[in-house]
Length: 64
Image (cartoon, rainbow, N blue to C red; front, side):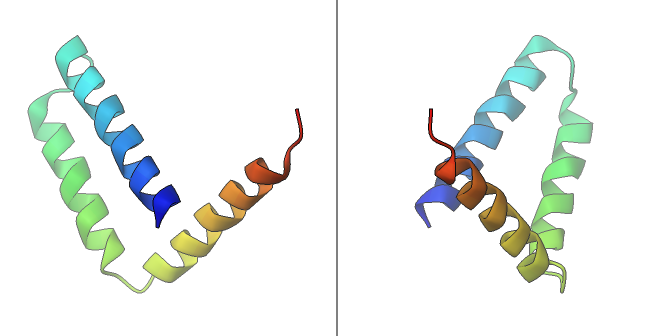
């Protein structure tokens, strides 16, 4: 849950920066948010979640 919340916050910050910077207008941003919302309620959501969990796990295992 902590990783999901962190990713949501990170993506929200990136979205705000893109909108304020002028490289992303409000219309396409709303479409992207709605796409993500509806994608999360589709049958693909568990596969996407497993993929993102495996990426987070792989990054976590890297020793610097």
